[in-house]
Length: 106
Image 1 (cartoon, rainbow, N blue to C red):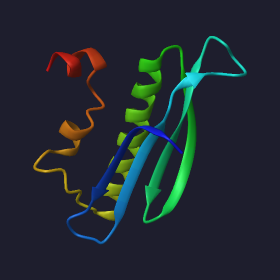
Image 2: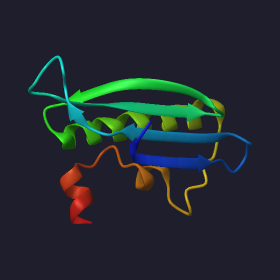
Image 3: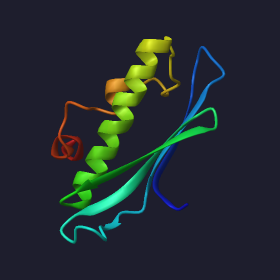
C-alpha cells in the first residue's frame, strides 16, 4: 500500500508502537465530486482502516489529521500513555483546534 503520509510514534512509558498513514488521494468512483483515501491506524501491528472523503484533497488531509488526533488523544487519556514527540505536546504535534490556514501561516 502506498502512503501519501506515514508516521511512526513510540511511547515513553510502554513498549507500544503506533503507526498511522494516509493512502494516496484519488477521485471517488461512486461520487465524482468527492476525493477519497484510506486512513490506516496501527497499534502494535493491529491495524484499523477508515475510509475518508471530502470535496477537496485538503478536506481529506484535514479529516486524516482529525481522525488520528482524536484516536491518539483517546489512547493517551484512556491508557495513560505518553508519546515520544521530540519535546512537543500532542496539541503542537497534531493541532485539532487550528485551521490548515493557521498551520500554514506558522
